[in-house]
Image (cartoon, rainbow, N blue to C red; front, side):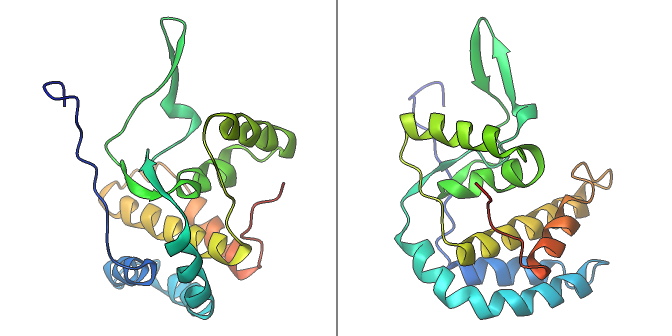
Amino acid sequence: NKLTGNVSVYEDKSSLGEQIDTLVKTLQNTEYIDDINDVNKIIKERLEKAQLEYELLPRVVLHGDFSIRNIKKYQDQVILIDFERSRIGVAYQDFVKFFFNEVKDLDLRNAFLKGYRENRPFEIPSETLQSVLLFKTALEILNFHLSHPEKKFGRMADDMLVAIKEDKSFLEL
């Protein structure tokens, strides 16, 4: 806010499992539900362990749609734009789509993490939590596609669901 310099950022206080359940319910009567239900069975087996870890990780302000398209150069400064999906969460959540879809090269990925860690602490969650957060991200993308028929994320959510089914839902470094 320009007047006070303070900004209010949304924080969902419900558990990770409740957040996922809400998204799954939202998508019940859609073309995606069969794939969602298949993967949800896998995630349910991992959720208790993932939830414990998730609760212990520090919370930060997330951009909510971190991607190359939202990084711009302006007056010799690198800036981040498009904050309408900002919220409180675990730092790794901001990079799920970024690492899954945009930064696949391991050297580039490691260089990004090195640079990030020079400025902020960053912990990569266990493979269990990574898979749960990948599922949550896929659900958020599918939910976004319900109100945006142009489906700007293409098949990314479908690919995420397949990665979970194939047990390839963790970050390679």
